[in-house]
Length: 190
Length: 298
Image (cartoon, rainbow over all chains, first blue to last red; front, top):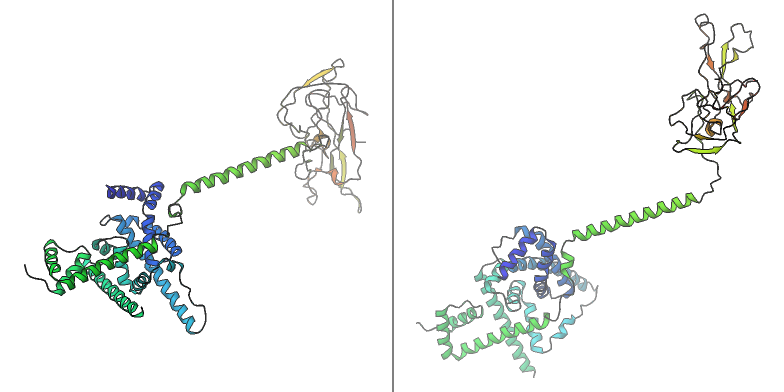
């Protein structure tokens, strides 16, 4: 039923119906924003990415063939936008690193969101997730934050399901090992 | 049913985490976990890890709601643009209307005793036959009293230059000749003394050129612009002259001299009264259309 509604809404959007476009955006803007936020881990940048994602999606609406769910198609566009922003961020980080080498610039302060993670174990887990490569971190986020199935993740990332499962397996193992190491180190420190 | 190895059991646990385990594999795994404490600990550890990942991610990002209204910023707004244009046009229209009203009010406040703008005086060079024409289109019937039917008309005579064939060196090439014209006899209507008032209906059509128009009644219907005309032309009257073939170097035998170019020359003026006779020789009486003649040349 919801899929049919979305399909009808998309059809209306294709005709340029302004109300339908607004309704479609309102329906999905929260999920898209959460995805952008989870990938970028920066609230302001996530809002910009959300806007960019919807602009890109509305431009590409003619190419949507309804082979996948609209949400999956929209997530794929959002992830592409976020990946572009991550590339730009990496470039900036390299510049900052070079500046640090030459003694220029200031050291980065910890993000305020870091204060939300209270316990040391949670902090270790968060650091472990952050240290995962993008290839493994994105499936973890999509699986455990956005509750997407392996099939949906495969469609979103445009890879096959076996690869998704393999990446999830590898990421879980890495996190488990790092947490285990942290627990062992914590016990030793205590 | 074959017993699972630890390696297979861990692989099945991973598949179960992704909900990819089939029913038969699920049965084998359950059987293995029932007897293997090591794999059971691994499964518990992995389940806890998954729960911790979910918790930490939701804890981190759920508290950060979307603050922008993306729908309003993303959705196209053609109607708003149209409304904006309509408002701009309406405001411009209101401004122009107010400006026009202000200009009209300003013009109405100009004193009415200022002399009316007269029509430009006819140029004798561009238009050799100036005419006395009404300045306003007659559209209504006016009734007024006769006692002050005066109008001043300045009439410039028309002079024809005749080549002076017997001139001596140093004398003028042309001899000016005052052209005679006829004055129409006074009409009975215009000379009626007992006529106290009259109704004037000026002719709507233009008066023929080369005539001085004295308007239908005896009152001030000699139009102001005609009065202020600098010259009055009369149709050229045939003047006996010698043919130019004898003196091919002379210009055209009959030439019209524009007296406005010679301010020192004497000019004639006349006061047109309803029943008066203009001295010295002729009487100009208002009529429907009378020809003013340059007979006042001294």
